[in-house]
Length: 94
Image (cartoon, rainbow, N blue to C red; front, side, top):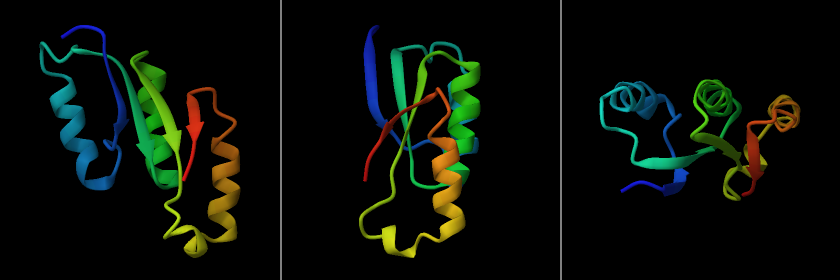
């Protein structure tokens, strides 16, 4: 169905990323007009930014889970702040 939007795709985690890239390359996988890739750490966010740079369907969102926020170190917060300046990051939440 053309024009669909996926507002919460968790496709950049270690386990899902390689499988998603294979599936996304298959012919006929163009049903979604936009896909918001939701990330939970800097590594996922970097992958998502790379994907968004190569495909206009993708936007990026980032957020630490409230259950994990106290486990996040100073360096991770610094990386997050840097990544939030990227134009492909469209949303931040928790």
